[in-house]
Image (cartoon, rainbow, N blue to C red; front, side, top):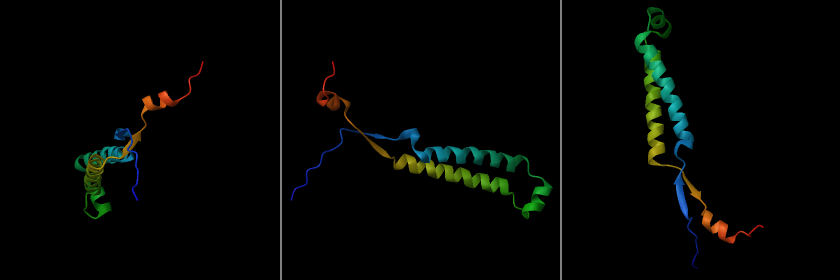
Length: 97
C-alpha cells in the first residue's frame, strides 16, 4: 500500500508570535530589574529578612537564565506554520462579476 501525501506549498516559522519568545522577553525584563535591585539596593534589613541571602540578585539571575533557555528553545526548534499557496486558490475560485 502506497501512501500519497501532498506536501504543503510553503512553510514559515512563527517568529515573534511564538509564545516562547514573549515569555522569554518577560522573564528577561523582570530578571534584569531584580538583578539591578539586588546589586544596588540590598540593605541590612533585606539581609535580615532573607537570612543573609540576596534573594533579588539570585532570583534575577535565575530569571535571566530561564529567558536565555526559552529563547534558545524557540530559536533551535521553531514552530512551523504551513502557508497555503494563494495562486492556487485564485485559479480554482469562481470568478465574480
